[in-house]
Length: 384
Image (cartoon, rainbow, N blue to C red; front, side, top):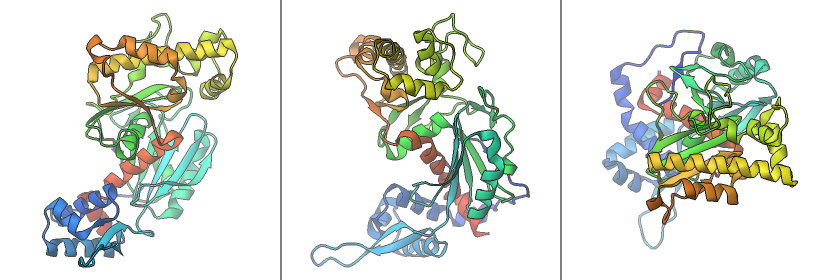
């Protein structure tokens, strides 16, 4: 689903097929525990079609490996006592590095998928040694990196004003031999909202993130569609904008520069800001007529473009992240409805604000790392 890179300094041997096969049932069990913590053994066996003996053996293996713990499940009436499975509080962990335009954060999480920030800094160019030191101390099983930039074939291909194209993953791991995974921040934010946020349970969902520019992802049954080279979801570079405006990507008329801090600056008639995200939040906080008009214009551009995506993809729900929820208002609503095909307007696709806020990409990176290490291959690798 996402590119994986070998950032580790040493050679890591992959487990053989027989070893992987031995962990396939355990991987399925962990999927259920992640999706429904507190599931009973009985419900787990029914859900996966496992015998009582296989369930007992698999749970014992996962307890020994440190992944799960068992708690006494509440029993009503005279039912037989049973146990429920929960993520082990001191079990294996993964790390997630959230690179942003203005700062970076490193989070650690266990099987519950909830990150705790353990290190942070201001600018990405100074982060590798700090991150490496923090990673080396944690003994985690994988590191996932969220980039606020397009990736294609595992490489950052357009980094904007900051250079992430030469970020050395070996330095990020601090010498630890662990897998390094990577994804686009908007894609990871969408993944997180599909797993535990505003798009949970949706068969088809659109997630759109406005930060510096605009990105997003189309999710089918909770899985981001990343395209042939991992670069899908660059919605901000659809030609929904002014053809006279040159985007930093090299194309004209991109949608992203209509709705972010650069678009707000242009509407206000001021120079392009050095820090477009901070500029955007300042304008969004203002109440003067000029600022409100600029925000309304950006909101209308966002609504109009979202209508085009809805017409194209027919999602169950649209989720907005980053600064996008703050662009919603009358101008957004009017443009969104006007841009929908007429037959959609009686029951327009709902637009929801993301529930994970500024942490969405961090949660998504954790989910990406956990998907890797709780797979049959990841479990077999950790057991060697």
